[in-house]
Amino acid sequence: MNRLTPEQLAAGVQDLPSLPAVVMELLSSVEQEDIDISVLAKKVSHDQALTAKTLRLANSPSSGLQVKVTTIQQAITFLGFQTTRNLITAAAITGCFPSGRCNGFKDKAFWRHSIATAACARALARRMRFNQDIAFTAGLLHDIGRLVLVTCHPEAYGQVVAWQVQHGSDWLAAERAVLGIDHVDAGIALADHWNFSDTMRQAIAYHHAPDILGAGFLATIVHVANAIVHALDLAGDDDDVVPRVSSVAWDAMGLNEEAYLHLFRETELQFSEMSTILMA
Amino acid sequence: MSAPYQLTPLAETRPGMVLSDVVRDGKGNVLLAQGIVLTESMLASLGRHGIDLLPILQAVPAPPPLDPDAIQARLDHLFRKHDRDDLGDWATGILRRYMEDYRLQREVGA
Image (cartoon, rainbow over all chains, first blue to last red; front, top):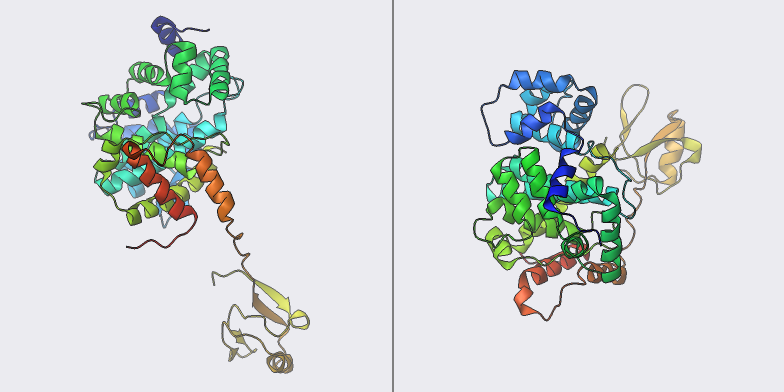
């Protein structure tokens, strides 16, 4: 067995590739309205790869722009600051972890699931009149702890994968059995290290347990979005399994079947557009 | 025009093909309207008007037919942790039913 202590986890997080400084700034200020936009646009523009990816997202059909934006500043003008910030974050996060380091870990399926959950959480949030941008980012990051474990402890995580296959369990159980900690612990460690906002940290911490008092509505949205995306089979993983849906969380959505069928369709459409760009 | 079409030489057109756009003669007069199903006599007439290319609507490939058994089998696999008889787990049960309606394109009452 490959037990990981909290100290080892923390040390691993320190060694993670760091995000561009401007993205760290965006993530820690996700609920802040008063950042200087022009300074931000300039900072992002210095990172050419990030700018290019962000602009491709901004110009994809789902953003509904009639014009083609060619600079970050233009994207902010036409799409608004919040939306542009989302795109920048998505573009940065999906490119920052190395892939193929851990035997048996399906990087592609991981990102497909994360991007789809982001799209679904955003669509749900709109129906709940909840902040869509925060929901999108939370959906994208909800399982980021798995990537932390895979990146920092690839061999140990290889054993988690083997254990999961052998027992047919869910990931949380497999991680706890092999490592003694799980991807929620790792996600929280990363949230602290990368200075995520409290709301985001809560969503990562409680997306498997939205019923816990104080979990927050964002965790509830991400919990339901996560289950829907598993059921939609968007990760492209043969072994995908739908986790148990909390009835409290499902109740809190208060949507009827017709609304859900629209939501499924919207999630699939948004996902197919975003994944083509983000996973290129 | 948003429908896919192909400019087809008159000699290769056949009765039953559908025009994707209006056909005009050299002076701009409309000879045939968009959406017309071509007949033998129309093709002959177009030849007399000196038309040699026609915008023919391309058949959009039909989506593969649903295979309800395969879809149901995949959904059952995805929901393998869910027990239909476990009434305490009704939320997962509803998601499962909605997803079946969605995938199998069942009519859903509003």
